[in-house]
Structures are given as C-alpha cells and as structure tokens.
Length: 247
Image (cartoon, rainbow, N blue to C red; front, side, top):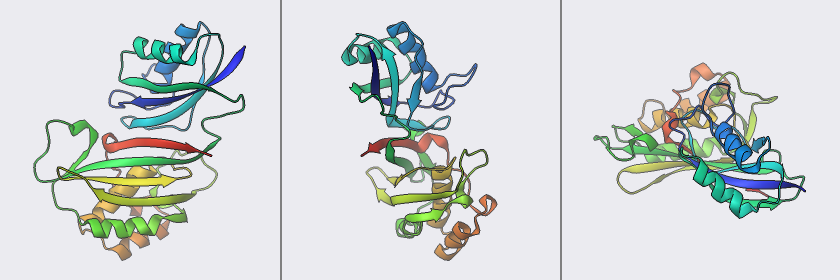
C-alpha cells in the first residue's frame, strides 16, 4: 500500500552543497533519498518545504515522500538515522494524508540568524554564528526589522537566480533579541523567501547596527528595489531554518 510520510529533519549544513539534490555533489536531499531508497528497497524522491543554501543549517526542515511499504514510520526513522553517518537526523516521521505536500501546504517558515557580538572570536561554536567585533545598536536594528514587517517588494534583497514570479513577500514578524555570552539572534517568519533574502536582509541590518547607514538610508535601500544598493550577504553558517508551519 502506498503511503505518504512526513519527516522533520535536523542537519548541520557545513559540509553540504545545500538542500537540493545535485549531480556529483553532496546535498541533504540526496543523502536522505539514498538512505530511504536502501531501507525501503525502492526509488524514493522526497519533497522539501523549500531549499536551504550551501552551509545553512536546519532544526526543523520538513519533507514528505511516498512509499509502498509495510515498514513502520518508527523503523524508517531509526533506519535512516543509523544509516546516515553525516550530520543529518530525522527527528520525526509519521504517515499523513495522501495529498499532503511539504512545500505547497506550508503557511510560513521561521529562520534564526545567530551573531556573536564581541571583540574576541570563539573557539567553540564558530561554525554556527557570524562574529562581528564592533558593538551593534540593537534598537536601531529592531527599527529596521519593523520596516520590513508586512507585505512588501523585497527585490533589493534578492540574489539573481531566484525562481519566482514576484518579489513581493509577506513577513509576519522580524526582530533582534540579545542572548547570553554576547550573542544576538535575528528571528524572521514569513510566507516565503527569495534567494538569499534572509542573509541579505541581516547583512544590511547589521550595517545599520554598526551605524554605517541610518534608518532613513535603510528604508531608501528597501524602496530602491535594487540589490546593488543593499549590504553584503551575511555568511551562510549563521543561518538556521527553525521551523516550518502548517495550518
């Protein structure tokens, strides 16, 4: 009997060329499909909620796949986690309705971006946060976050090659929180995101935090709809897909 399985996947993206399957390159999707095909003894294709770029991590990526099998969800999860030696873990696996699709049925995605804001770098955790030596103005950065919350055209923060028909996106919330040990987290939740949009946003918001641009200048960049006006793309290793939400 053909069943539709939904999985929640956690991964360290450091050594991978992103989520999407690529020929002759190691990707999250490719490794999962390889392991599932071995365990289920059939060709398995999985559908993710969306792509993550090379070097980006995830706590809660969601995907689904169809398989004709009597193997239980629990045993599929255990089998994949024992077979894959790379830092990929299936945290949950269960059967869902046949029509469920991880990408098309997602209503929002939440990303977190971690920053270490102190003079000294760190030895532990350096692969999971962007080290910025100079003090950041959190209030200024949060004013920028308020400017991007809502339905707007994010063309200024889109890298080329983004598969889309429109650059308008709905951001439900975005803000900066201080954490322990001189760390900050940028949280953003939206219906969907353009290519590199989150990293381009935080790269530009950091310029405001460093007082290299004013809030007025940030808003002018936003309204320009021109990627060349915005700040640098923040490093991939600070970005995490926190969770994908469904109705």
